[in-house]
Length: 193
Image (cartoon, rainbow, N blue to C red; front, side):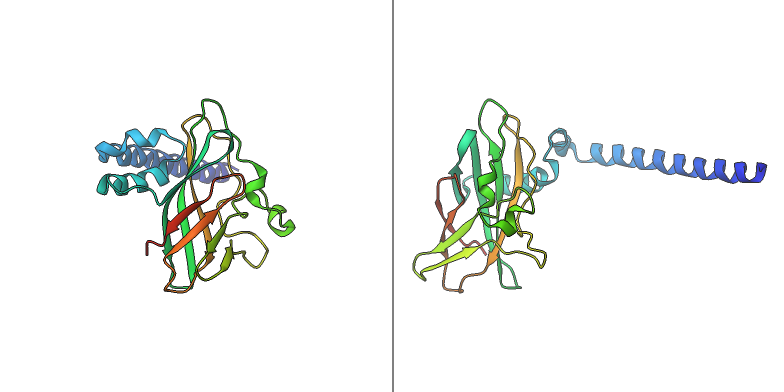
């Protein structure tokens, strides 16, 4: 019995040592990047840190589109890039510009049963190629889940969350598309890569 207790105590000490080392490592990491300490306080830290350099690199560069939605929601589309697999990924940030908490409406999921049953998403988004006379819908995986950001939190005033949507890529000669999302204004976006 005492040997079992000793082994268990030893494991506990190892776990405590590892936890302490990880905590110290995390503290050390956060203080290494002097300018990055301030953004760490926000809820959407990972994407904001990734977004800050691009915002600083091109202060004159504006989002591809800013679409106004209900309850002070603002969707800023920052990129529309072709992937090697034949996809077009549209990325940006969904921000609450209102002075009170905002809930992402269920209508942005669209009205398809297959998408709705997988929770709140941006599955209702479409891209319209007016020259090619085609409409592109958000892609789905083999289980019917939309390839887009899902399960949005309630957004406090000023909060934003990074978002993405994947579509089939239009032909290479298509460079401009109209982005549409239920309950939001539509906007023309340019494929950036």
